[in-house]
Image (cartoon, rainbow over all chains, first blue to last red; front, side, top):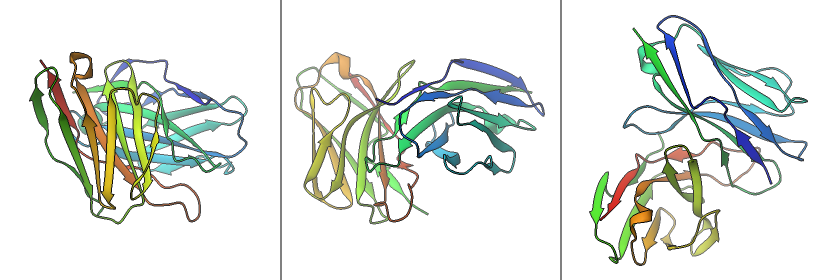
Length: 115
Length: 115
């Protein structure tokens, strides 16, 4: 069974600085998809960024980028120029290529951006 | 924009009551999901549905049932609520796979308290 591990329950960063959130996963599948979701306080969960395992290039979305290391089964999220609005729970998630629609989530990292 | 709505943001029920949580999506998505979110445990899948009247158990189905009579609506039912079902419940939807995997779109959540 696939598992997703986020080893940092809480992190904090100063506004305008860079922070990296860690995620590791375990799977025997060769192709799969990885996601980072953001859940701001009392607000809806939204997708931040996604990565397809067969694509070697790391995904980037504005200030958000990932460091995808397939061999190490690592998928970290880097947030550059942190903003107060980045304060949220961040969840790493995995889904296999093989047909099941089940998304496997990590336990989450609570990120606080301080002014 | 995809919109996933849930019938209540906050709900307080008594032990033993039958509880209905409703979820509606407006983008004709085939797949719908119910998750439970607890601090330190992340999101855990209760049930999902890939078509009208079709359902599959997730990781923690005990004490819950679901109903999907129409494509846009997916209901979670607590047959006899218990205090250990106090939690945040999130609904999500995603279209059927055509090419690759799609992101899941989440509702705002229902915070259920069982007294």
